[in-house]
Amino acid sequence: MTDPRHPSRLSSITRRAAVGAIAGGAALAAFWPRAPRSRRTIPSGRVVLRYWEKWTGPEGEAIQRVVDRYNESQDRAWVQRVPVADPMSKAMVAVGGGDPPDVLGLFSYNVAQFAEARAAMSLDEFASRPGAIDPSIYKPAVARMLSHQGRPWAGVNTCYTLALYCNRAILAGIGADPARLPRTIGELDALAERLNERDGAGKLSRVGFLPNLPSWWPYFWPIMFGGSLYDAARDRATVASDECIRAYEWIGRCAARISPAAAGAFANSYARSFHSPEDPFISGHAAMIVQGPWLANFIRHYNPSLDYAAVPVPLSPDVPDPDQPRGMLEADVLMIPRGCPHPEESFAFLSFMQSQEVQEQLAGEHCKSSPMARVSEAFMRTHANRSVAVHDAITASPRVEVLPQTRAWKPYADLLIGAFDEVWSGGDAAAIMTRVQSRAQAILDRASDLRKRREGAPA
Image (cartoon, rainbow, N blue to C red; front, side, top):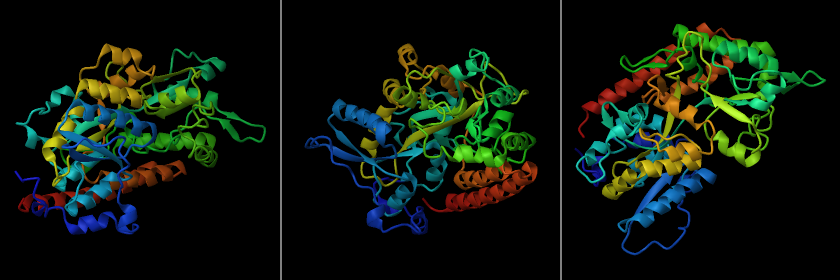
């Protein structure tokens, strides 16, 4: 076990990796995060912990209230939240330079990269400390996201799943039953076609549903056809499987029904409107949309009278199981950078964040479901999202999928962004996915080679 207090033992975080993280960037002074002024004077004698977190706006205010709660709950440490854009890249630079923060707020797909780069401390290094975390406190899929290669590396800091949100008033307006929302891809397609509207010039004024609205999850759709992007046991990309190809063929058909250009133009017109009064769903220009649970927060702020409901995203007819909903799960996580100044105090804060009560406070304010195995009745009853039970069921389902737990996920995902656009424009899905799988596998193989070299290097 390495000693986190000695930066000299961080040789596995190469200077080349650190420089690469900011290649092409601005000067370091502009790049580096700056702490905001503290809300109050830090009490004397406290150990000050720098906590880098990506959230700003209402989400940042919510996590600040939790931080304030921790600071008032004990007299050993004082957590200072520092809003940081792109914390992953900046943290790699900071760890490589021997000056990391004490706590990092990252995404679940960052866990593998930080673990394999030895840029974070495994939580089993604190197994004998007060507050040691039992992974059974989480829903099983959440616990899986927080570990890598059999070791725990992160604590959770909210999670989310996707659901199909439907405007019940618009559905009722065309004679559809707002109490019977689509559960299969076929039902979704048929209903979406009935909901499309055009103005006098033939331009789309309302869509029933578009899979590129928003375009944030181009890798999501194979899950709904029974496919998977990655075989972890063999470290293989699987996006060219029959199920994945069927998913992207469906995407091509969705575009073709309206026309790729018209559907693309409609989606692009709302690219900067999400989570605002002009959001396509909140404003009524999209009758159905796949979104995360936070959408309810923006609905109650901008259009509280909107009559909406959510269901699990419709599936290929051979996939549904109402008792075990299928979907995708992602999480925000907390990690302790290796070489941080105060690892013991950092772990105490991370452990505090893993309590059911704290997680329900944060998840409630972010309008998300709870990542914890136990969920209070009051949390569900008073939640701002009337469909939170849908998200909770997906999170707890044994059939929920998490993003590929590999350090190669980000470049793999970038390939899928381009592939989605190609299929949308009429490209052959089978040929495109076969090419993407080959390129993704090359990325995975390089990551595997790097991992093996690091595993053979001295700690």
